[in-house]
Length: 95
Image (cartoon, rainbow, N blue to C red; front, side, top):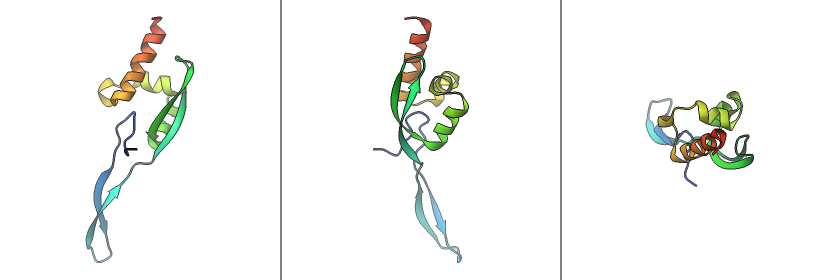
């Protein structure tokens, strides 16, 4: 499993450990990716996703997966998130 959030694209960042004597060694900052199944009201089903915990908090704040996806700009979403958003839009429009 790649360490990338399926909705926001948050991924591994690189930086340095800095010791007391200011020696630097390379390190990785990995996002906290969790496998979750989120309920979509519009689709009427649970959607399995691998998302960052920060994204999960944002989803809860927006009132669920549908509210989060419909409120996000398309340019900020990853392909999987964009696919889900379009699926929800089609369902809500009546097609």
